[in-house]
Image 1 (spheres, rainbow, N blue to C red):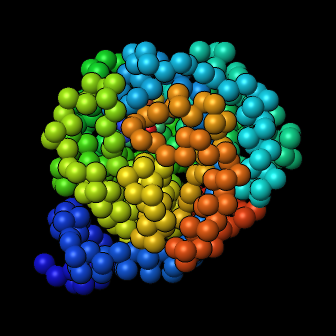
Image 2 (image 1 turned 90 degrees about the vertical axis):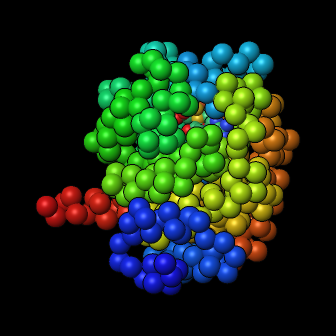
Image 3 (image 1 turned 135 degrees about the horizontal axis):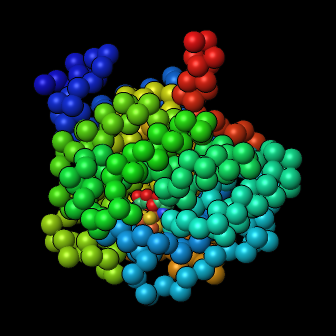
Length: 364
Ligand code: SAM
Ligand code: SF4
């Protein structure tokens, strides 16, 4: 196969994607250049900030890869207070971020659901509805998704983690709380409720093949998602998956594969929002900027109070553990201009794909 020929195709097949995921050297550069051009043509060279608030590390689940899984007793469990959340929102607002993400372990129960609902309402009041909120709080019922939507959340991130159900089963306990079909259904419920829906996968997991990754990309297209957040899997010694650490690709290769996934998704879904994730920065200090240069257009500066960061370690060597939000911002600004992009301060940066989806719904 010839890389230029494949990149000119109007629709990429699974076989094409496997070929492109395997590119190296000059051919890989061609892929990255093509993706950068697609980004410039379809979403422009703007980067949108989403202030990340890691609201709580309390989780009822036990995903085999995650450092804050319920059975890991190493971390003290925390939940940010409402004033702490509002202070982080205020930082985002004052710095013209226009958008925040509230992320946490998965919990159900009325206290949790009600607390999130009340935080969302307070954010709306405090910012006059000017801050857009993305939630990343796991699988919930349709009723809960609707309550949070009505309280002011606009977007929701729920990674499918891997789109292959058999692989999903190897990465999660086999019980009804970790059910692939339930997660898939949750994604559909989110769309039905009216959210801009984001999903994503981890890259470089044990047992994962290039064919799985190609299928993940096709899955995103089939689900017609509005946003994506993908990043390398990074092992954590307090998790069951750690026993497979010797079978993993070296970190640099996992990073490289993640860049290719970002580039290919940009080519495949030209007008969606794609995040340059923290896990990319964990492997390479310039990882997020590199992701911006091959197609990503969203960055999530961490606004979590520093005192909680040591307890939100999903994986090892997570960066910026002691960096306050303001320091984080100035270092990011410099890095983004090096990458040749401009920051869309004060802009919601809604997924263009979502907007078009809305327009076509109105037309029909
Ligand atoms: N609990 C919610 C959920 O699982 O959807 C949201 C928070 S969860 C910590 C956010 C994401 O962290 C997960 O979707 C997963 O992809 C990622 N993650 C967890 N452990 C990881 C690891 N060891 N390496 C890379 N990413 C990881
Ligand atoms: Fe909990 Fe999410 Fe981690 Fe799974 S990935 S253990 S649901 S925080």
